[in-house]
Image (cartoon, rainbow, N blue to C red):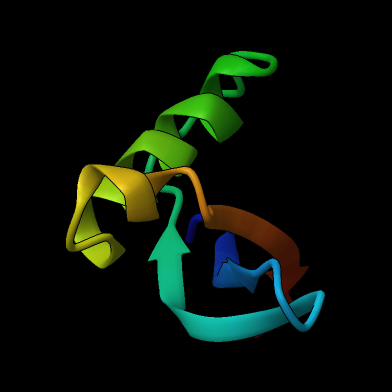
Length: 65
C-alpha cells in the first residue's frame, strides 16, 4: 500500500495551514523527489479551484494508517 499525505491550503493572512484532503502515492518504486513533486501537482489539480489558489496548496506530513 502506498503512502498517504495530507493536503493543506495556506492562508497567508492568518499564517495557518487548513487541511483540505489527502492524496495517496500509488507507485511501487521510489523515484527520489519526483514522487513528491508529482503528488504536489496532483493535489493542486484536485483541490484548487483557480490558478491563484494552486500556489496555496501544499503537501504535509505522511499519515500513518
